[in-house]
Every structure is written in C-alpha cells, then in structure tokens.
Length: 359
Ligand SMILES: [Zn+2]
Image (cartoon, rainbow, N blue to C red; front, side, top):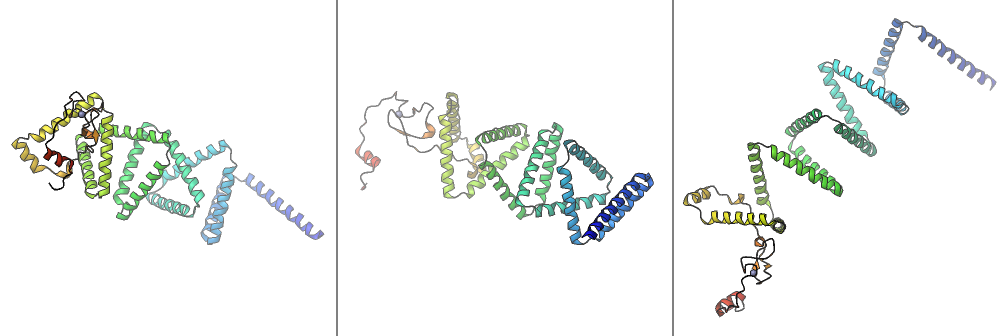
C-alpha cells in the first residue's frame, strides 16, 4: 500500500516535470523552431489520420464533435461573434484560392457529408434543423435589400427551371404530389388572419402580374386558360358536371343579388346585345362563325331553375332574370299590370295540367 502511494506521487511529479519542461521549451522557441514544430505536428497528424482504422476514425470524429460542442457551449457572445467572423474570413480565403479541381472535389465532399448527415439524423434533429433553417431564411429575407431580393428571385427561378427541365416523369409526378400535399397541409393549418392575408397577397400578386403582362403574355394566358377549361370539361364525370353547374348557378345568384342598379342595367344591356348578335347575324358573319365555331370553347350559360315566383302574379321565373329589387318585370311589370282572370280553352288547360292521359 505504502509502495503504491509512493509510485503514484513519483508519477505525478514526473508528469508535472514533463509539462513544465514542455512549457519552457515552447516559451523559448524562436519563430523558425515554431514553424518547424507546427509543420512536424501537421505531418504527424496527417500520417495518423491516413493510417487510422475505421473505429479510430469514428472515435476521432466523435471526440472532435464533443470538443467542438463543449467549446461552442461555453463561448461568450463576443467569442461567438468573433468565431463566426473568423470562420467566414477563413472560408472566403479558402474558396477564393481553390482550383477548379478543388472546387469540384469540395462540392462532391459537401454533398456526400450532407447526405450522410441527413441520412443519420433522428426525427427531432430533423425537426430542429428545419426550424433553424426556416428561422435563418426568414431573417435573411427580412433583411435583404431590393437588389438582393431581385437577385434571389432570379436565382430561385433559374434553379427551379433547371430542376424542372431535368426531372424524369416519375420525379415530375412525385413532385406534383409532394407540392399538393404540402399545399394542403399549409392551407389546413392556417388561421383566419393568415387566410385573409394570403387571399390579399394572392389578389395583389395577381393584379400586379396582369398589369405588367405584354400582349403576347396575355394571349398565351387566355389560350392556356381556355385549354385548361376545355380539358377539365372534357374529362369531368356526370357528378362533377352537376356540381360545376350548381356552383356556377350559386355564384351567378350571389352576383345578381349583390349587383348595383348600374351593374344590373349594364348586364341587361350586354345580354340584349349578345341576343341581338345571335338573332340577327348577317350572312357573312354567320358563315365565318360557323366555319370557326367550336362548341367546347363556348362557356356554358346557366341561369338556374325556373322556380322563382313573382310576388305579384305568381309567375315562375329564372333566377338569372331576377332584378336586384327581386321584383320581376317580364310578367306583370313589378305588379303594375293586373290582368283579369283569363278563361282558358279546355283543350289547352288539359295540355297544361296534364291530367287527361288520353290526349
Ligand atoms: Zn309578375
């Protein structure tokens, strides 16, 4: 027991003396000696790394990561800022001085390292990373100048174009599905304010886009819209068609209910004009129209069912023909015409009420 203690004290004394000697040596070395030492160390480090086994490699990476983590955890705000600046400067110097081969090799290394890191991260790490990225992105976007903003949009558009140009049919299909899923999730989770803000943003963006388009862009857009519409109509099922007509009728009814007196008058005039053109075509325009007409390009008109009853004379009318004051004109001129009861010939009455099945 006594012997062990003495050995321990001697060992400690030895290691203290070695450390002291090392310290003295470091303090007294001149610049050349220091450079030579650093070079020797770097060489020794390289050799050690080149010859390490897979386990040694993994253990070293883990030790380094742990040491780095400890260092980062304990640094002050100033040290943190200074480190970021040093790193950025070192990175800039490194990038500026690399050759084309080094550049290519670096990109490949970075891609490999990134892939490995992503492959091995757990769900929480992934979530934390995405959150950090989103936060960093938001800060960058919030602080960018007009030029940086424009340059970013252009870079993004270019990158997107390259990506789309080079994707396979499967990648294309997978992308559309991902996009739709992401969009659905985003819409499902937005608050009422976010919803309102989005609609306003979209409307603003649409307005800007329409205002700034050239005649060719406008023509291309209208053509594309017509094609999309035609394709949708061509491929819809009976239920989809019924739902579409109903939705159109509701939209129409809502628009009519909310139109002002001027909008109402303008609509009637438009309708009358369209009617006049249809009813009295010249021989020439008729021939041209028949040669070029494509029924699929005609947007279906639907004025809803004939089930709107006039409050004065009980006539049935189409919703699409109802004036803003909800008083019909075509039947009794808003109740101004009060015709006496008419005697109807028996034959006509039988035809109208459909009681006599023998006719
Ligand atoms: Zn009436």
